[in-house]
Amino acid sequence: VADDAPLLEARDIVVAFGSFRAVDGASLAIRKGEIIGLIGPNGAGKSTFFNCLAGERQPASGSIMLRGRDVTRASPEDHALLGLARSWQVPAVFDDMSVHENVMVGAFLRHPHAAEAAAAADQVIDFTGLRPVARARSGSLGTPARKRLEIARALATEPEILLLDEALAGLTPTEVRAAIDLVRQIHARGITLVIVEHVMEVILSLAHRAVVFNQGKVIAQGAPRDVVQDPGVIEAYLGR
Ligand code: ADP
Ligand code: MG
Image 1 (tube, rainbow, N blue to C red):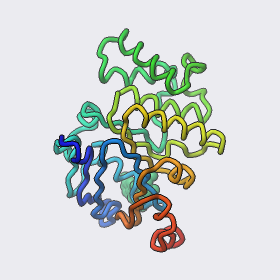
Image 2: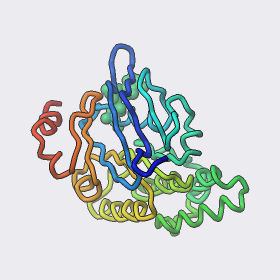
Image 3: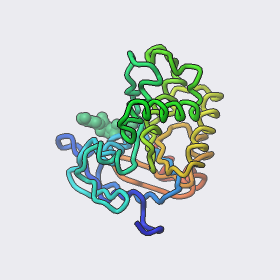
């Protein structure tokens, strides 16, 4: 992939549920090293678009290129192997497993032997600040640790690009600031990020570019400070 080619590029993505188009011709090009903030009202199609980017849903039309390869119809596993990881809006951790075991699930992608996966998981647990709860049952965690575990499991797959879908939702302001620090450290490791987030402080302090979804379409994008003042964007939020 040439240096200026997008790391991930979605073109004209359409996802329909019956006659309703949840994603209606959305395009987005993500360059290496960017932090993109994806915003928009509830029901705008952000999570459905993420599902397409991660290979969990095939669009009715449109194309997705990841590191120069057409992955429009590729499986989530193929996306992961090519270096794309995501967290879910609804946390999908295995409650009965320990934190360390959950992170190992991610680490197995690159480390087929259990001892290596365990060691790789240990590094991610230290990096994400989960060491104090590494042996705890995942189902016993509070919201902040659970959100961190989601991110840790995604990081354990050693991604080049990480999609976070409301990974900071439900956190107190203090916890949000700690999570912002974690996202900065992830970015400092050279990982490209796309974050869906409702807390504008997060978008304003982290994102290089804000992309606004409304009714399945990208209605605005640009510098976060400009985008949040765009009359069309304000109208989209108030119109629902
Ligand atoms: P967002 O993440 O921006 O809040 P979603 O992508 O979750 O939006 O949803 C976009 C729209 O598609 C919503 O109206 C939602 O109800 C609808 N939708 C999402 N998933 C499904 C599904 N599996 N079946 C039917 N409708 C869906
Ligand atoms: Mg969503």
